[in-house]
Amino acid sequence: MRIFGIDCGTEYTGWGVVEVREVGREETLVAVAHGTVRMNKRESTAQRLEQVHTELRELIKLHAPDSVAIEEVFYSVNAKSALKLGQVRGVALLAASQCGLKVAEYAPLSIKSAVVGYGMAKKEQVQYMVMRLLGLSEAPETMDASDALAIAICHIHTAQTELRQIESGEVSRR
Image (cartoon, rainbow, N blue to C red; front, side, top):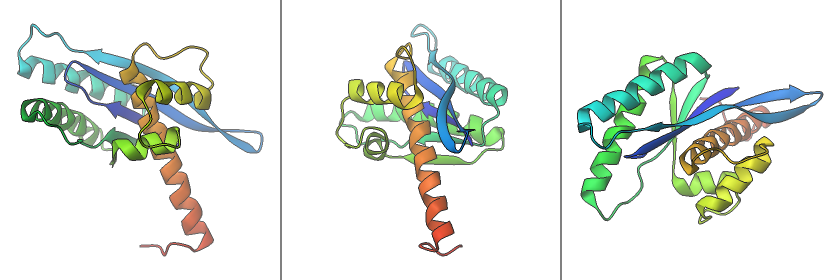
């Protein structure tokens, strides 16, 4: 299973690819790649959105994931910020769809719970656990890339749990 995680932002959009590999009889999470799409503040909104779309689409094609995971929109006091974030999410969703991939969306609390075990964890705690879970010797370049890896890990954990429940008969097949 290979997952492409996306952490949308209005200035920086993090991305990360996590894969499950079998090592002996155990499954291990491996960071395949990660990085950050950095938008130029001097460009128009349309140009920045085009940049995010183009870069994410190329990265998705390059890394050939099985699916994409993205953070859901969270509540924001500032409507203008929420709108801008929604635009970035829209082009990220479009890039995944154009590559023929399903998209899973997760709430920030779910992502933090899956990675840290505590839904109110700070960004630094998430980054630390991402490094531990993936065996990284150093932190990703940006918190946005760490968050994208966390989103991918969350999806892997969720998919594995759902599969185990189906296999054990706890959940009926739909």
